[in-house]
Each structure stands twice: as structure tokens, then as C-alpha cells.
Amino acid sequence: MGRLMALLSASGLRRSVDGRALWQDLSLDVDAGESVAVVGPSGSGKSLLLRALAGLDALEGGEITLEGRAQAGWPMPRYRSHVTYLPQRPALDGGTVLDHLRRPFTLAAHRHRMFHPGEAEALLGAFGRDGAFLRLDAATLSGGEGQLVALTRALLLSPTVLLLDEATASLDPDTTRRAERVLLGWLRGAARRALVWVSHDPAQRARVASREVPLQPQPVTA
Image (cartoon, rainbow, N blue to C red):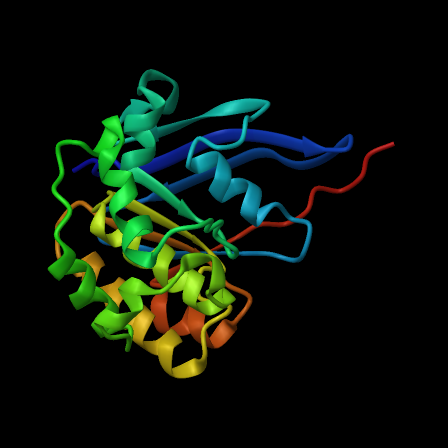
């Protein structure tokens, strides 16, 4: 029996930075239900890979597919509603936490979804925050609190694949463990979901990832 189609797939990816090749023929398959960690030394392009998978950075070659459909064939807002990238430092401007959680639901890509404040409060409760957190000014939040807002917002939007780029790095150890439990619970909550992590913490990778995908910097050629 042949292998089932991967949920998210990349093949033959090429990318360089300042004339230096990061990848020349990078391939990656992420199956439904997987939690995968991308690992590699500094400069190997881990964040760039996640951004490319999310359709946020251009590639010099290769193809990315979601459920068998080429990334280039998707309307990009719709693709990004399925493949969501969470950076280490999410940008949060003015307005309350509740405003930031509600705002994506006004966009065309998410108008078929309903925002439920009770769901947001329940998620924040799982992260150890109460309802008062929703009323805080987002511009005054710490780095870790900003990460909680970004995680909550992404989970409320119910994507297919979550790309986590050091997305818990600013959290304290207790909240990090809470976030890991929430994310792994989300993964198990539906059949067609996946997580892709970049984390410099090997203990975290051991807790959350079913396998690791190594990236190695390409040798410099004369």
C-alpha cells in the first residue's frame, strides 16, 4: 500500500541569503497528527523555512503543497488561514487583548467563523490567566504575555497547521508547560492537524515532538 498524502509537503526547496545557499534541495513531509521539530545550528534557516511554509517568504525553487494542492494555487489569505505562523515576538499595537483576539474574525478569510469570548477566556484560563487579562492594553504586555495572546488568537482561528517559531520562548516554565499541553491537546482534537516547532530547548523538543527534522548549513563553494 502506498504512503498516504502528507498534510503539508515541501520538495526541492532552494533559498540563499547574501549569496550563501541555505538549502539547495530541501524536502519535508508533515503528516496529519504529527508534531515535528525543525532543528539546526544558527544560520541554517529554520525561521526562514517556517516563513516559507506559511507563504510569507519567497523561495528560489521548489514547491510547497497543502493537502496535495500547491501553495501557489491557493488564494494566499485562505492558505494562511490554514497554515499559521507564530513568531517569537508577535506585533501587538494598541487596543485591548480582547480587541486583538476579535480582530482577525473581521477579515474576509475568517468571516465564516464566529468569535466567542467564552472560548477565548477558556483558552486563557488553560494558560493560567483569568478574564481580566482580556481587558489589558495589549501595548503594555510583556513579551511572554504577547506570546499568550498570539497563541490564543491562532487557536481560536482553528488552522490546519501551526508553525511555532520559538513561540513559547518568553514564557516562564510553568506557563510553557501549560502552553505545550494546550497545543498538544489541540493537535489531538481533530484528525487533520499538525504542529511544526522551532525551539532551541532540547527538553521542550523531547516533550512535544514526535520526530526532528535536521537542517544543515550548505558548504561554501568556490
